[in-house]
Length: 120
Length: 108
Image (cartoon, rainbow over all chains, first blue to last red; front, side, top):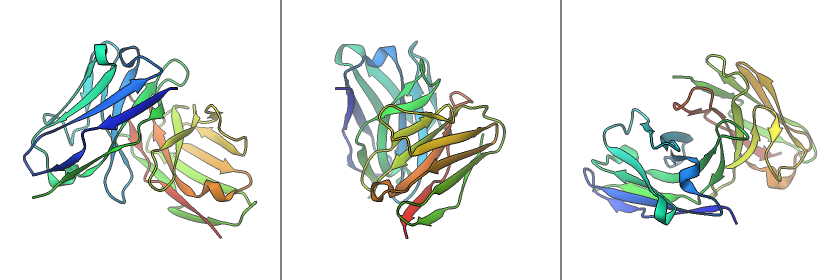
């Protein structure tokens, strides 16, 4: 079965750090473009970051310089390292496969989400 | 940044009736436009890509149209399980993906 399972969410103080994990099954993370999307409470979807198959990484301006996307090919796992977190980073974080061969960029597989709460 | 807008913000439709949702891009995204359905407490689900192609397993009552800057999602005969928020998403300008603010569909 093709699926993504996130973990690592929780409560963190402003200025702190947290690492989210996203384990893939049924497909290979490194063969795909992989994305993080977040959703603040009661709000819409916001693209956060993407890692290309070749390893290039890109970020939304709101997280540039604070968040780092990476992957571990041996574990078929995607990560989001969140540093210097702010109250406004509070959200559910979803990992998603960015399907290119058929759709040129739609997000076709989503994880169930990991909740991150930034509060003192 | 490409700004996506959606209208209406909220829509009440009787069961079996047609629902039409609109999405507009601040500049042309060609047909690189997707629609997602999000039910309460769940992750988004891909419905439509390339503006009009249904994703795997999506019922035929969902259809998409448009190109350039104007797009629509139509639910031909609303079912109770279609109650959700629907988001459009442009993926024409890699890697700066953007979503619309969503349209919430209610049962009348």
